[in-house]
Length: 289
Image 1 (tube, rainbow, N blue to C red):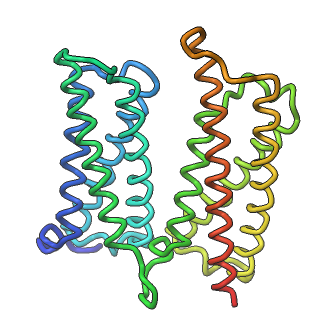
Image 2: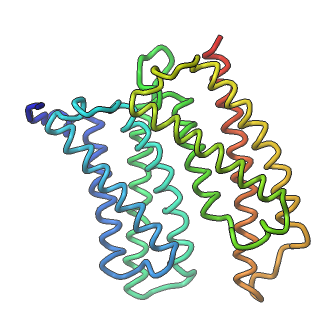
């Protein structure tokens, strides 16, 4: 059984200080929102989940490195922390935009707005902290680092996260039963998300090297397929999603406007992921030669 050994240096290093700031900022943000009950819809609940999730995992990272048990875990610790910092930066950045747009009106002078504005400011600072960690741990050319600390590894986390946001915007109750093209787009999002997430999990679990096929060639084949599939989705989704559905007047029908904005968001995110998979294909092709 591994012995506990305090490593105070893990708290005083630049990365350790960043970790402590992440814990403090995420904890304060969700505490303000939770105490003053400023999360009364799905947007507020997702924001609260983001801050809580980041606080819990960041605290776990700090504790494991403090007691020197991080390297004793049956996983690649560097890959785990690299993937989490990238994921946390993406989640907190999204929350820092969505939460104030929903809960802080244009003109607000009540005490509740002050707490919500403070939580938003802390969330923005928390994003900066995670972005700094991503920058500090990013593998430069020639450096031996974990795979998820490299540019292709960061792209994997970005691709999986964007797919999750797409799922949150898609309205599964309408349109799909009328257009097979939209069902194909959903198949593309799901298939690529599953494979990309599997790559991330196998990397953290140190299982990629045990696969019974050439990994780099398999990655090139997968990225090529993902680019082609996302290219079709980037064309098909806007054609069928906006078919007979012009932009509504938002002040007349808010729910219809929300649906239209969600479909536009899916369209933009589809192009973001298409670009990400294309860059990933370039990197994997370069690594396989």
